Length: 175
Image 1: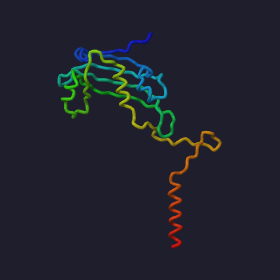
Image 2: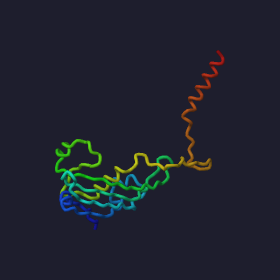
Image 3: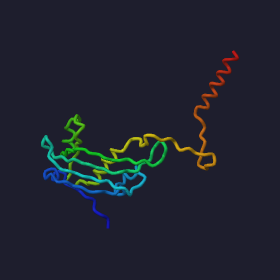
């Protein structure tokens, strides 16, 4: 029997100042699982409800864990330490959300819910935290040996330009 996905009433969480903590296996986050090499790892989350300084229902979300990504430079495994903290302000409707100016980058505005999926929220924030192009600080493309059957020698894309230059130089010398 599958484990039920936890949900929260964002407005009640804020009013009560309650805290929700837990872990989720990445295999339960299908969109995030597409970005990682193993879905056995876990993300930890901590959600603390509050009423913000302007009187709005809000919550602080903290998501952390280690994800295994693929380096786009060398195709080797890359450990990515996710540690995202963000404050969210809850509004009741899309119209209310659209009425707020997009000036404050410190507070994320979202439409609250009486039945919000914690896992979907954690997954969204984890995906937004991923690097656009995962890569090691220092690495190089894997070196392939001549005896390696997977070694494919791609033609040098500049070879044509080199040939044109040589022909041009040769023609110029003869004139």
